[in-house]
Image 1 (cartoon, rainbow, N blue to C red):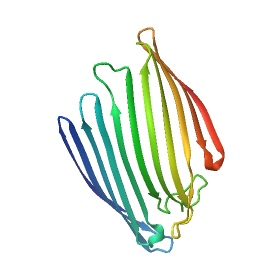
Image 2 (image 1 turned 30 degrees about the vertical axis):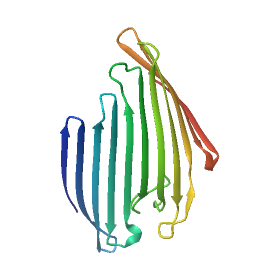
Image 3 (image 1 turned 180 degrees about the horizontal axis):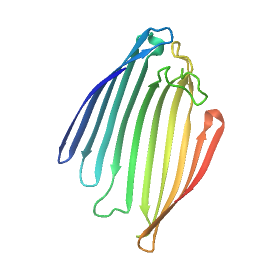
Image 4 (image 1 turned 180 degrees about the vertical axis):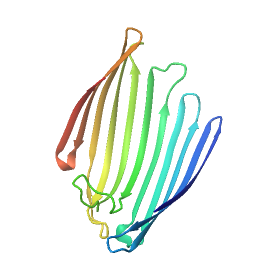
Length: 208
């Protein structure tokens, strides 16, 4: 049995845009032994955009969730995501576009969530991610771009006695966009994910 309510508010005026939302949810679940457990969840979502001038803008968001279970603290969950980005999209000469972004991430999944192996998700995760995206128009029909992102992540496999170990990764993307015959567009993209602490790499390509 689920009861939920939410409210959202937004404000926009010239160079400033703000948006906030609050959601509340109460879940009552029947257990195998005929008892009933309750889970209370609060979710807060916030985003903003600030236009410094026609070429530069700052964007960000802050999301936070709290989930508490009547079964005890072990069954609780939590989530925090904070993002701050700085974008360059010039008006007069738009050959170069750029976006720099920082993300902080903290996640304590509830034990109702399961891993890909169908086991209870008991880990705790926190990460710092920095990313830079660039796109440059070589001609009217050809653009090249790339992305580099670095994640300083930490994982704890114990929810109650947290002991974190590093889980770092770097992401490299190289991309080319093409326009031809007036009405058609295509892209070629190569990706490499380097997970140094696991001594593992994953690579792939995309053609569209």
